[in-house]
Length: 199
Image (cartoon, rainbow, N blue to C red; front, side, top):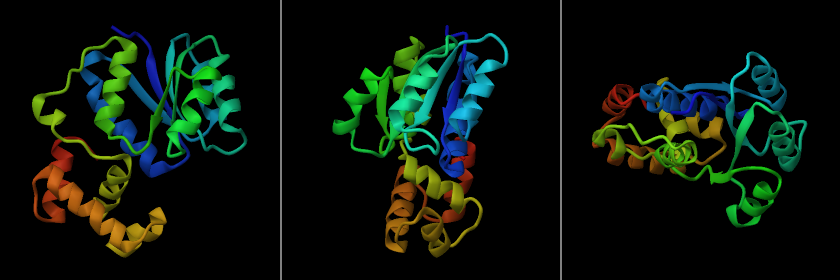
């Protein structure tokens, strides 16, 4: 049983909050605390409080630090057991660089939250404790962002503007969400996503 905590470091509030809530629910049965902060500075401040060990999920594109500097800075802290590099950057190009700088893993943001959870379980030697029903729902990080904005009642155009993507791309993501959740409209999608604690 892992006795430490997980810290998500990401400056995109929608992605950070969605992933934090999802992993909090996933790791609840294992008693693993999941926290999130927007910067490396906030991460170091959080880690300095108390005397627990940390697994850090680090977005590579943060202000004030290059990706590899951020990894090295966090990994140098004695309380940080693992740094997992997370990014939408090209995995082939960045995976080896990140591992050489001290990261335990590189995880692409194109992967689903369930994939991220399973990789963390492997790293921490924790058996996956999710129900069979939860295992069936796999949404990408971008779809979680769209879902979070949908839950606020925002129109497709506003969602597109906030995420800097086209309205057509938003529609594609929403159709994928409907398919994953086996629903036919936005109200049902938000309701079911809440039941499954995806948002």
